[in-house]
Image 1 (cartoon, helix red, strand yellow):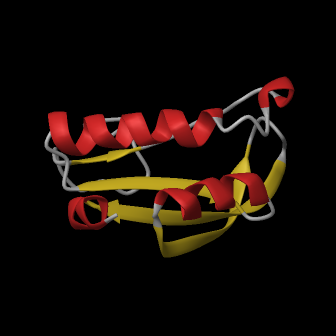
Image 2 (cartoon, helix red, strand yellow; image 1 turned 45 degrees about the vertical axis):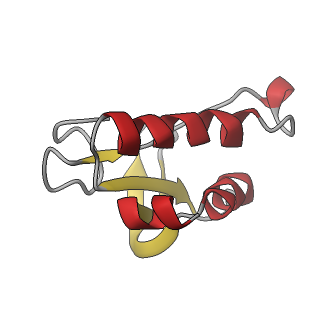
Length: 104
């Protein structure tokens, strides 16, 4: 997501990476592979300096994907209301900088 339609970005050189995958496709390595391509595009083609990504506490699969990709913990928003689920969850926000990407 570009141009202010994201969780933390502060300018045109920052964006957010998001993903969702149906249960029948879990465990096949599809999300990490797709995310690597999106990160490459963000940093190498679009000139992004920061890419933000998040997950809800308890979603260990998303947490693990972001760790594998090299995202680093930034912050946590507690009791975020999810209207579609009519419940509150803690939102963990992670960050990858262009320097992080180049060092991987």
